[in-house]
Length: 531
Image (cartoon, rainbow, N blue to C red; front, top):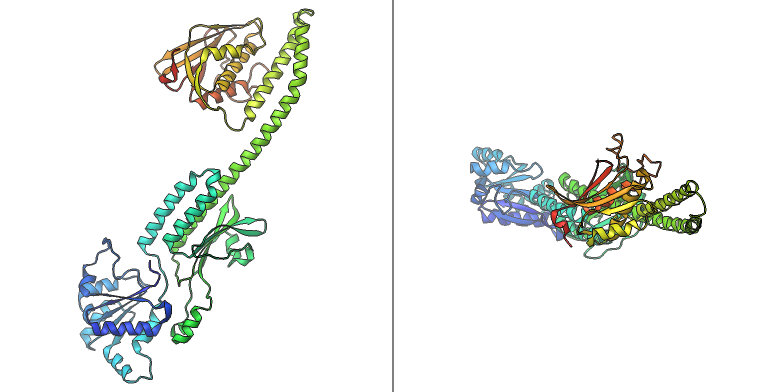
């Protein structure tokens, strides 16, 4: 893509080439005069679409060919295959029937004879005919996307997608700005501004403008065609050039070029959850014609930005709500534990003074209340089921967990040493506590619990078994679902066990063997080491 577009001259006649150069300068002049690229007939014939260099007949705003060049059938065929938007003007050195037939095979937009050129040159009062035909047929100075340009920008957007999708919250602003700069440089834009909606105002949140620019907040009505943006449609404004503008003299032309003509722009809506959350503006001060494929790529870029912003907003909202829930749970737990501790102390004092039938219901109520509070804090902990892991002695953690279980007549037996496992000690302890409480709730206050190692074909682990009634077949498939219980409890204890195991990369299963047997398989044989 060129900052100034190109008129290609096809032929080997230096006299005609110089005449075309003068006509281009006369037709437009100023800073927007197209470049002239001269190629010989042999170069046109030898060009192929798979060449690394651009074809001499592509990515141009117009072509002027000599009659002798188009007399070559291969040249005429290549010229006739040029895009419809690229005009071809043939300059015939000899006005003969064969010459016109050769010219017509090239599919020209216009034919100028050398006789016409000579006649006009004799009368200096008239404008050169080639200058007129160029001004009428060719739209210079407009940057157009080529296939290679689209491919390069597509690769940039693929990288941008990977970058933005892996962005952390504290990196969002930096990576969006960096990606905008990368896209702007490859698209040869002068400015890219990302406006984000704040009520009725659109604020320029992200700006790429290497030459500096002034941006300000604006309302939706200040964007071009706001009704199209509200229906999630792109708004495209290519540079306009009227016939009168193409024919003005140099003094008027220079004045117009510095008069602040509106830039060529593309405005693309940023949409998230079917709402307009912003507008992406791509601008260039050069004369530019936007093509559909190019605009589609900018729409893809806008969708990436919108998705990144929406995902980050959801992430921040979840974090805010989780912090509120954690704070609320901590306050509730603290306020409830104080009177619960007082009640527990008095129950312990009167243990020997009242009958077990009266003491047991109070003790169970206190135990259940403590369990509910522990589970509440676990579920409210901000999304992090486990913290830092370390080599943890399994049996020692199990014994520590047993001390917090209010079941003086129940027993815990360690069948054999299990060793150490890479785990979060606090969460492993909570796993044991919940399994122990589950055994007491279902097996009664005198339940016997046994822990031992297991070594199977799929790795190593441990089992936690009790001599209670076992697991009912009706709930075996949903036992670890939140709210499922057969003992009139909260039903979240085993759900937390499953959650802790999953967070460590372990698997937990339950079977019946003279009671319930919880089988925990560690991630790999190397997860457990002997002590």
